[in-house]
Length: 280
Length: 147
Image (tube, rainbow over all chains, first blue to last red; front, side, top):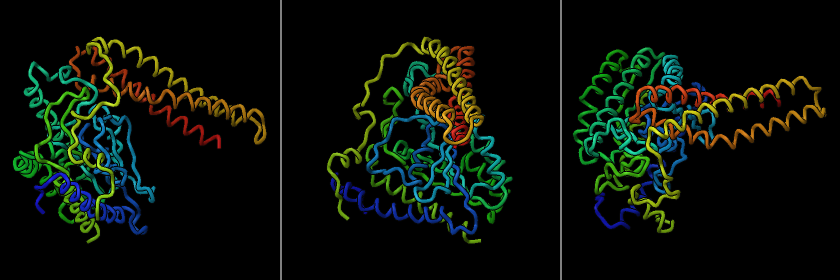
């Protein structure tokens, strides 16, 4: 449908389609629960700090309502967070903290668990460089010289490099993983980079990120490894610092119809991964 | 399906804007970053020690509980009471301790600070977070043993 309309149209569309998206999510929950005979395996959500891992985990666990809950101020996770489905506590969605110094202490064991085949799938979240800045002014950031725009460009460049580093750290464990495993690369915060979406799509499908994925795919083969890329917005929010300084407004015209469509795409991709997992 | 909720939450949800949102808590006054860094270093050290002391105390109570005579023994009741007090103390410290970690973490990750201060902050925060996480686990572990 056309997304151009009055606010009331948008609201009606969003509420009607939210139900569809929720049904898709319920299908995914059924899959997560499994049939009990194949053993339960969890989902691991990885990514740098401030990309939206916790929000995604809350959405997948059914704890977050993307129409009712407003985007919270970003708070870092200090230890490993584990989310379970309300009626299936054995199904775990595991979210470790993303900051580099915290990765040293928490990710090694998780990487070993990937190699051991403990997870049915890995969701690697990135944000095209828009990693939330907690509790500080950008003027106190070590990349800040004397201009907010230059700071944002330098910060995003740094964050994108961090995203590739995390993928490179993850790749050897996926290569060595026992059994079949899928990986979903989720590029979040679409509302912030919607106007440059063609370029972003290309960057993640053809750039250094894609090269790492291609190598993984070559090594594992399509029988044991499946990768998908999804672009989405988990929440709609301006890019502000922890001090509430606006660094980048969300894209004009990006509303909840687009957000819900992006989530629908993500859930459809996850449903396709389910088909693949169950097909062999 | 028709919308059934009141107008305000939907209107907020349609075009949320963090910049426009009223802050529920006004921003507190801040000191220059370098000054804040020097202030938090002794705090991290102090509370890391307090958390370690809580863990040690929990284990002492746990051992003493196990050594007491079983059921209906006043010693066990007293140990249980002591342990509950310890748990309460931890529950009260925990929110502010997490807040402290969240305030210091961006200083370490991104802060424009001299390298020695950064290094010291990083070490102190690592110890502090470790103490925060292990104390919680220790309390759970001891409680499990006291069941």
